[in-house]
Image (cartoon, rainbow, N blue to C red):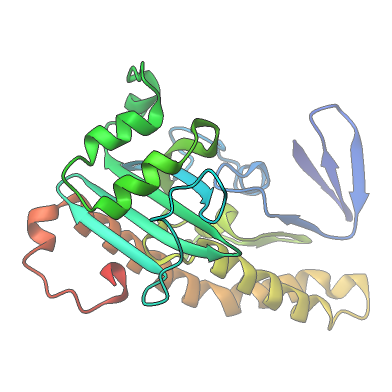
Length: 258
């Protein structure tokens, strides 16, 4: 969709329907159509400001207390977040509560290459082969994950939006639409939640619609510095993991590899 600025805000949907309102919040992800309309740039591809990170990720979830799950998979009270790092790939396991694990297999690959890579035996056996000889915990979790529980996507990133606008009149961007970041710090959803909280605080001060643009501007000014720092550190962590040999020469004192 696109949007029109006509005193109020009119969102033009793909169906051609027009939806009118006082405020439009573009929380439509890294390929944001709202951002594209605001800045006069494409949502994807050249000129969009989005770049490939050098990594693709396979992600899965499983219930570790299900009857079909091996008995050696279960909660670990000593550590709820684990990262296994090696050349050109790493594996993350996190306990998300209520008897469920979430895992991520990050692979340094060319953009789009994994979509065309044949996996005749299935995704889980393919990943087990890539992580053969690694921690048995990672392999146990891969064996226990069903094919329909695994998704794959290439990871893209954006530079911090310090100089480019977050708002235009009664339109504002939120979350990945304005500060998409690599997942190394686990801050993508966290920063989006903080955006929403701050946005709600600012809009709560509005007594008349003519104050809306000012409230959105205040929201962006209060969020841009913090999100830019977090976004930059997430990118740094990703760059270090791509260069495994360099990473191994640096003391692991930050939050990236805990």
